[in-house]
Structures are given as structure tokens and as C-alpha cells.
Length: 261
Image 1 (cartoon, rainbow, N blue to C red):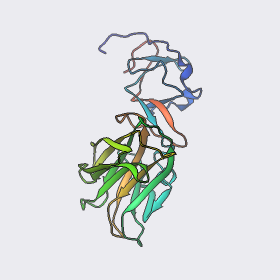
Image 2 (image 1 turned 120 degrees about the vertical axis):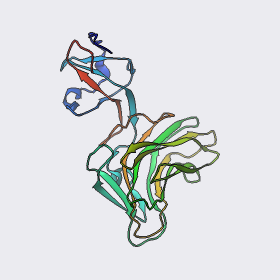
Image 3 (image 1 turned 120 degrees about the horizontal axis):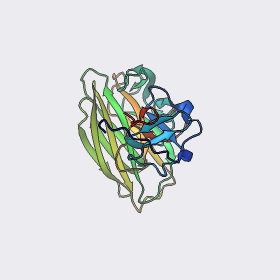
Image 4 (image 1 turned 90 degrees about the vertical axis):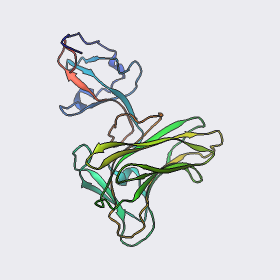
């Protein structure tokens, strides 16, 4: 924005949560909102209670109610050990989850959230999660799944390099897109986007993660930041800790009367 200082637009912040000023900290880069009405990435807003000027790069949604604690957000677990706070996340926090074998059962390790929500034909959902190989390069693959029973779409990724290995779909839930973004230090953000077709007749949908490693004591994979949103692309990660959120992400701040830098 150069050296030109502009007075921030005093937006109608009635859609912002009343706890907004309490939620903002020096390091927080998102602002939770009750509605995205009147918000776009071109808006620069002034928060009246603090005289802070804020701008943002994205509007994000996360329907996963606890994006960090996978034991909470994916309680249906098979042949798996899920260890919270087991490693460093892609953002430097010490709350990555380790998914590995339970030491007893062979076969794939599976995490599910049954009855996630109730989609309608024509709806689109994007599921993303950060993953990192914990085996020192031994490989393995991670499968993301959205759907219900036999009506589902899948995308499988190499957890060492993020390469998509394959996809599959049913007639009722079609694979729309799937890719990975390199976040450095071995972390990749994996994405699966699906479209619910006219034949989808299940009352709700499941979201699943499968580690395709068959040894009972396999070293597993680090996971962080599960996110599900009703969009065709992955928005900036929005952390949740008890409820679904919509928020302004990539927030920068400035003092009253200047452009947020």
C-alpha cells in the first residue's frame, strides 16, 4: 500500500462476536465472526473498542469443532493409537498428533467422525489436514475420505513427499479435486474436495483418515489442523477448540488512522 496513510473504513461490525476485543492477542492472526455478510478481502475495518485497524487476506470456515485434538474430533478409531501433543506442528506449536499402530492389530489405522453433517445433492465440501511422515522417510500413505458407507470419495497421498497416489469415487459422491501444499520441514497440507451428486441419499456424512501401514508397531504419521469447509478450495487454516468457526484470517493490524501493515 506504499507510504499513503488512509483512514480505515468504519465498517458495520455488528456481525463480529461481542468478545472480539478479548479474543484478539498480539500473535493471533484471525478474528472470529458470526457472519461474513459485508466482509470481503478488500474491506479494511476499524474496531471501535480498541481503535485497531485490521485487514485480512482470507475468510475461512472450519466445521471441525476441535481442529487440533484429533481424539476429540475423530473419536471413532480402529487399530490405532492417537497420541496428542506428540510433536511440533507446521506452525511451531507443540500440539501435533501422532497416529500410529496400537502394537497389537495389523492392518490399516483408521480415524473417523461419523455423522459429521447433513449435506444435500449439489453441496461441495473440502477436507484438509496437515501431515508429516514420522518414520524417517520409510514412506507410507495417508487416505482422506468424505462420504458415507459405500457413497464416498477418496484421495491417497504419499506422506513423505505429498504426492497424490490415487483417487476413487462413487456415483453419489464424486472426487472434485485433491492436492497437497508443501509447508516445509516435512509438513504437507493434504486436500480432498468432493461434490455430492443427485443420488446421495444418506442422512449424514462421515470424514475419515486412514494410514495405509499394516504393521502393528509402525511408526505412524504426525497430523495437525483438520479443517472441513463448504467451498471448492482450501482457505487459510482456522483453528477451532470447541465449536465450528467462521473467521477473518491472515489478519494484520495498525493504529487508528493508518493502513494496517
